[in-house]
Amino acid sequence: MNDPTTSATSRLAAVEAQLLAPGAPFELAEEEVLGERVRVFAKRARSLRDVLLRGREFAGAEYMVFRSGERERRYTFDDHEKLVASAAAAFAERFGVGRGDRVAVLAANCPEWIVSFWASVSLGAICVGLNGWWTEDEIRYALGHSKPKLLIADEKRAARISGDPGVPMLIVEDGFDALLGEYPNAELPRQPIDESDPAIILYTSGTTGRAKGVVHTHGNVTNMLMVSFFHGARLMMANPKAAQLPQLANSILVTSPLFHVSGLHCAALTAMAGGAKTVWPMGRFDPEATLDLIGREKITGWGYTATVLHRLLNHPKAAKYDLSSFRSVGGGGSPIPAPLIEKARALFPQCSHTMGVGYGLTEGTAFATLNVGAE
Image: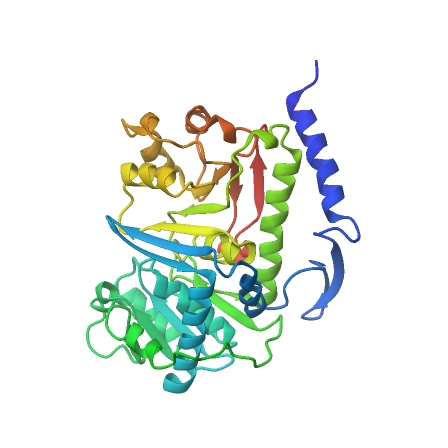
């Protein structure tokens, strides 16, 4: 009898060779990066602004949906680009933000977070994602460390900073929209951006001391996006039941914070590059509201932690909701117990071959390892 694990591994190896071959979508090339010869994806975008520009292919499609109770905010890719252009013009003209400057964001997941990110990197500036759970001492440390030219904060987190933050601060709920409204016809910046230019600073968890700022260049992130799509393509092509999966537009449920690679890189950035809709439940994680949202928005993918997966699977009404739209789900952040994985397979069996468990770290630009299906 054939070992199913061996058969699955053989299928994956064959698919990988096909995807990585010369002329294929994920063709590899060797190039010099910061003085070192390394392998890169030949067909990658050359900057995050290029990724944003590629989003024009999906102009009328939805890019982000933020939902809090019955209140929702929806934006197409075209809506989003117009906001980004206005924000970039405002940041540059009003606050002097330019190439190499830092723009810090201290806020819960919200549209303004994502718009501020794309505006910053489009200017050649560096977006600094500050942990929304930090205390004032931790916030002030990171501000002193990253030295931003502008801080964008929501009211709740701005209130943690007593006195002068030492940097101009723009409040999400009070002034952000009005400022962007002053630049209604702005165009995206055009100044040169090098692949080796820093684009992002995210902070580690700081379990053994002060949180450390990790710098990601444009090249780091554009290659990471190719890794993400490579994994997605290999899983679907090697899946013997791929034809049976729901034929729906990609719609990603996001329950991770934007100040973390799982929320920023693996959701907001990946969706821009791939034309997917991102759906963001706002506030504390609510299992039943999330179950309802999955069916309502026809969610096809979700990246979870063990904690939120456990809460969703063990909700007493979980089996009563329509979860048939799921195509691929997976998690990481901490080990996911085997019984929890089996329970997930029972609730959304169509994902058995695509369900994955990954490991990554901020210093590695999100991805390090990924085991899927029988692995």
